[in-house]
Length: 257
Picture 1 (cartoon, rainbow, N blue to C red):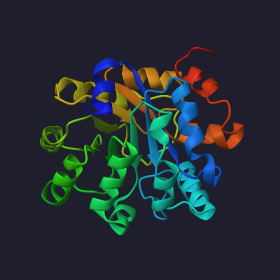
Picture 2: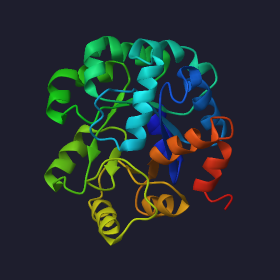
Picture 3: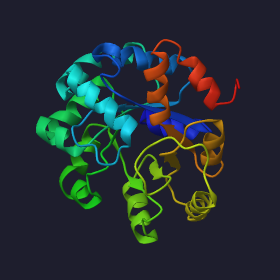
Picture 4: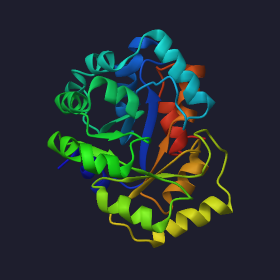
C-alpha cells in the first residue's frame, strides 16, 4: 500500500506542508523535509518551481522565482532527494506544473520518483482526461498516486468523475482565488465544506489554499481529512529561517499559543 493511503487510513486532522524546493537556499530542500518530518507533520508536498505559476499567490510565486534564480531544476531536485528515504518515512508528494514534467519526460519523471520514494504527484494543469488517456498507466506502473483538485465551482458530475479516477485523496481548494494565507474562513467556505462532505465521496478530501493558523486548520479539518499549508509556512521560513520548524507546527496544532 502506498504511504499516502496508509497515512489516510491512520491519521486524523492530517497536516500537510508545502514548500518550494531550493528556497530559501538552493540546498535547503532535504533539511526542511527532515525537520518537518521530525516536527510531526503527516505529509510533505515538495514544490517544483516553475516560471509561470498561475495558481499560486505572491508568496509562493516569489519563492519559485528565488528558487529558480538559486539554480533549482528538476534533475537537481531528484539528485537532492536520492537518499531521502534513509531518513524520512512519511508520504512525500511532488507538486508542480506539467511543463517541467513534460520537458523531463513523463515516463522518466515517474520512474525517477519511484526510485527515490516519492508517493504522489500533484499537477494542477494536467487535465483528468489527458491523464487517463495518456499517462495513468505510467503513474500506476511506478506506484504514484495522482492527486486531482476541485474548487467551489467544480460541478458535482466532475467531482464524481475525479473521485472515481482517484485512489488517494482529493485536493479540495478552499476558494476560487490563488494560494495565500487567510485569517479565517467565512460562511461561503463553510457551506462548501459541508456540501462536499455530504457527497460521501470514496476518497477523503484534504483542504488547501488559505490555511494559515490553528483557526483555519480546525475549520478545514472539521469536515475534511486534513489540511495543506503553503504560503504561511513559506512566510515563516522567510522570516525565521529553516531551523526551528517545530514552533510553526505547534502553532498550527495549537500546542502553543
